[in-house]
Image (cartoon, rainbow, N blue to C red):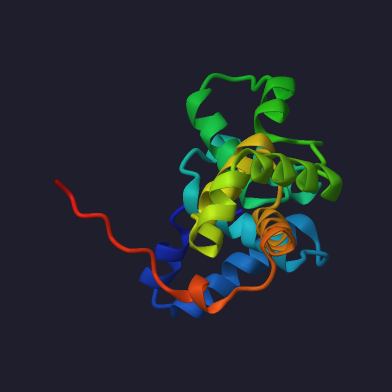
Length: 182
């Protein structure tokens, strides 16, 4: 696969940025065959652009190619792991545990985590309604389920909040008043 600064190398040789990206994609096809889906391609490109340690690249490419690392969160954790563990060999059991390899978060688990978080903040939610900071709910649910898909968490929060509060009313559209700093 290409070196971490392959894009700069290819553009430095006179290729347009689009052509350089296409060349990188072709290299990935040579390694993985023609069955690269878009999500895998994005992860591979992210890997190449973020990893400077070429010794570890093939190790991580194999995890991506085999769909053991299939999210950006897992890739970020994998990159952090290989940077913080520079000595060979890599403890694969520890690596896989730290990167969420094999962890499957079910929609039911997401539903339960969001429900628990909403119950914890229910009084404040009922008082503030849609002016409540929904990011707090999503952050707490994300903390409970580290490897869960953020989009699924957001959808579940939106659905459960709508179920609890009902549709937005005119009063919900009024911005929260700013608190003056002393």
